[in-house]
Length: 186
Picture 1: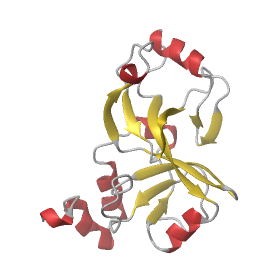
Picture 2 (picture 1 turned 90 degrees about the horizontal axis):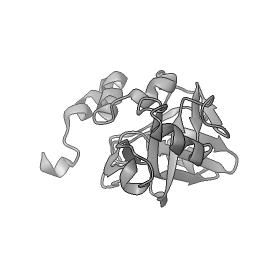
Picture 3 (picture 1 turned 135 degrees about the vertical axis):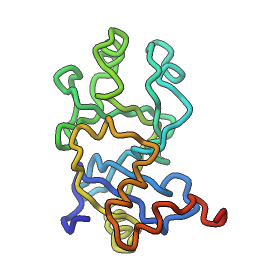
């Protein structure tokens, strides 16, 4: 955990107490932007059953699509670590970039110059209005941590990411690492 203020590039780990919320239960979110107007993030550990080719047929790729969050789930977003290849990208932090020229990205994927280790696609995003995320932080809904992976976070396995982070926190969190996602099943 860190005691710093919220800032883009940090990770938000859902508190184990977030139950019954399909989007946020056991989520790890990369905070892509945070300012006085609000915050934007992408859930890193919720793969969907879609591939990029399912959503954009002119892209010949089986890259997994992730549930980025409950906002604008009819839009495709992406983060990457290759700004030298994708023009008009916006740096989040630590060598991770958001968006850029999609047509150029499509061409690079089709020519094999981009692989799944340097880009990740999301349907939707997670968004908070001004001060909303701070309020959720104060009510202990999220644990704020540094992104120690830097741009390698794109290569991080998604299936056990929340559990790994909870185990790293240790202490009172350890009991949650092996608890079922739905405590009613215990």
